[in-house]
Every structure is written in C-alpha cells, then in structure tokens.
Image (cartoon, rainbow, N blue to C red; front, side, top):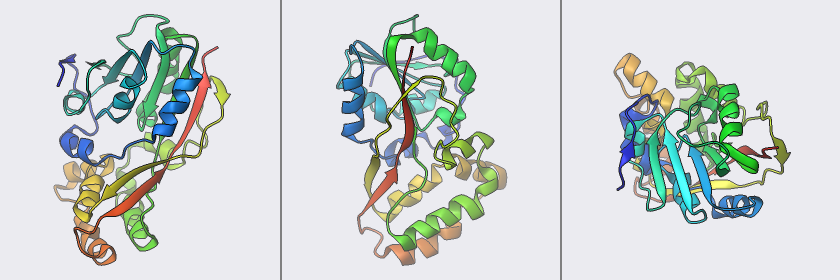
Amino acid sequence: MGRVIGMTDHDLFGDRAEEYARTRPAYPKELFDLLARRVARRELAWDCGAGSGQTSRSLALRFAGVVATDSSLRQLSHAAIGGGVQRVVATAERAPVRDQCADLVTVSAALHWFDRPRFYAEVRRVARPGAIVAVWSYYRSEIEPAVDAIVMRLATDVLGAFWAPGFALNREAYRNLDFPFERLPWPELHAEARMRLPDLLAYMRSWSASQSWARSRGTDAVEMVRDDLTRAWGPQQKERLVRWPLHGAIGRVT
C-alpha cells in the first residue's frame, strides 16, 4: 500500500474505517466507461472524498494519474488502491491540486458532507476548461421486501435523529441538488454487492448514524433489528444480491 500524504484526520467513518472499506458496494463499470468517454483527455482525475477507494481504483484503470483526497487519514489508510493513485489527506474545499489540471472530478457518496459552494469554487480552480464533474451516491438498498423494510426501519425509525443534517440531501436522492455546471444526462445505474447476513450487519454498523448512536449511547443500534433481520434473511451464510440505485449528476465545467 502506498504512502498517505497529510496530517489532518477529521472524519465521520474512521471509527469503523476497516469495516467501511470491506462492506461498501462496488460502482458499475458502465459509469466509469461513460465518464471516460465524456472527457477530452485522460491525464488526471481528482477523486474527492475518496474514502476507502472504490472510485479511485476504477479511475486508475482509465486515467494516467489519480489524486484521491479525503479528510480522514484512517479511511485513506484502509483504501486498497493500486499504482497510479496519490492519496492525500485534504478537505474537499482545499485540494492539493494545481490550477486547471484535472480532466475529471468525481465525488462518490460524499458530496452531502461538503461545503458545496466552496467545493464548487475549488472544482472551477482545479478543472481544465471543458472538464467533467460527476457526483453520485446511494441510500436505499434493495434485497427483498421483508429485509428491505427492516433495514429502512433502522435507518429511519431508530437512527433518524442521528444522521447529520447534510445527509438529508442524500436521503432525498439529490433531487434538490445545487449543481452549477452544464448538466449532462445521468444514467440509470445500480451499485451491487453480494452479502451474507454478517456482511449486511457490518454494513449497517458502518453508517455514520450508527456510529453517532454508539458514541452517544454506548450501544449498538443494529442489535435492535438483528433478530428480525435474522428471521427475514434465513441462514446467516446464505448469500444474497444487494443493489443500491445510484442518484447523481454529471456536468461540464464551462
């Protein structure tokens, strides 16, 4: 694993950084192929809010260089990223990237945590004229109705008050997203993962709201739905396909 540059360690997920990296879904190849076709050149991509590196890994297959930034040292330290990616601890609003050098800027499952006006200004500084900006996320998982209902009960009824205010943008599927770039069509795509019940439980424990609950109350909120999930899931080692509809926006810097 390459060296992580930086000292700051402000994060929402660092308490379970390893679990976060292990349980988050992979984004579809079709999305990255689309973005690669949209750009004029493939010299540098800036993956902002890179987290555990799912997006950075896919970009590295398509771009000569990738700068992966995140405010969490622990997140980046657990990112399984290969060659061609420079990992730097930095905020979204102050990137260690020179002016007008990025051909693509991506933000996956992180934009709702940013100071968006300042981040957008930084994008305009970093991006080449005509560069592409793509932001996306996910919220509601699709497994089967009985399981889905229990997962959403945890997310809304149990943990509703423990989500940070900015998360509302994600919960609303970016419907009211301010996005000051020339809009391009957003494709209908899903993230996917194959999970056993212990994987799903670990995924739910990695939520920022689950961690806020644990810090506030000293207990594991997921245990409140574990028995119901076990009954709905069946054998714990039974593997199921989990799909997350992606919502997002693609734009061109003009």
